[in-house]
Image (tube, rainbow, N blue to C red; front, side):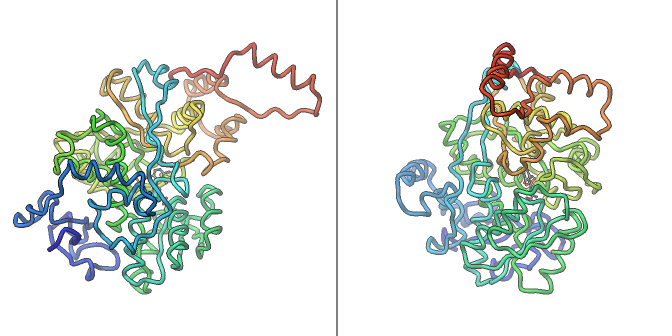
Length: 467
Ligand code: F0G
């Protein structure tokens, strides 16, 4: 087997599949998920260890590629293609994804009493979410394998990414989304990029079930995150963060948890960095869920990762409105791996909204699902699991414009109009009016605008207070 070849290994029974003979639902006969294994991977048969890539040479090469004009080199995923050799260079389908900023969050850090706080903004990808890093990888494989159709069930971001990359590759795309429960921005992207968009009268988990049957009966390449090639692309932000940190390993990475592929992919990425000698230890990876969509929280904290009870999910953070996450076993092995030992926390709708406003006030912004990370960090600081002087990177997974309606509802003060809040939540929300920025409608008269300005100047800047 050469350096550019790979197999697909079952995470349950260790069976190995040739990529050409992989089942259409990407599940082993034992029912478990597959992951991509290279000759140099940890646990790969011993005779292949001599094919191990050289960390020092790769660090240099990856930097050098940043100045290249080749499209593969300009991609923040394929720049690292030495560690995801899944297609030939001329089969790569890219929109120049990745290379996303690692922002400092000084206002949030100060409000939390931290020295500094960082956010890796994956919403700064071509279609506005972290899904692009995985989609470039999996669509490249789909196109090179001769498929004409690709399909996914989605809460909106996967479908936006799939539709865009399918269009670039000249493939047809079938999108299944829950009717009425995804943000308009995401729905519009799927239509704009020309996908066949079907809104099913069910939730995300129902859409997944339907799609799983469809791929057994029609020649459609499955692009949900059970597709292990998606995770190969999604592991690369781990490499990029380490590069951006000048190879200093942060103490903590905090990610939102929905279908749990992102946490699994980043776990794989950091583990590969350690295995190949880029770093000598890995950061702690923790997952945050919305309390209305918290099956993984229960799985980790009540069952020690041994079982997962599916729930009927409900949260305004529609991206993570998922009750039966496909990648939960992969995520358990990341969270409970002795060198990661992360946690899973849950946060309320109010905590999400307040955290989102605070991230917005940094001039960064994100979609509600991404804001669970800051809300979760507050809990970890409060109970001492994270110390104020530790280095924390929040994974912001989606752009603020993905769900503009949510933001407008929050700032107009109507987001919680029909919600059942406890009295302490009501008091907390009332105390946060200063952080809200409701639009003011006026006649076009200079004096009136100046009066607003006067009042605002009296108030000082929009302040952040810890929740
Ligand atoms: N954040 C955003 C913005 C998302 O769109 C998703 C998932 C997640 C976090 C959770 O990531 O599933 O890997 O744990 N969105 C899906 C979709 C599932 O269809 O777009 P995960």
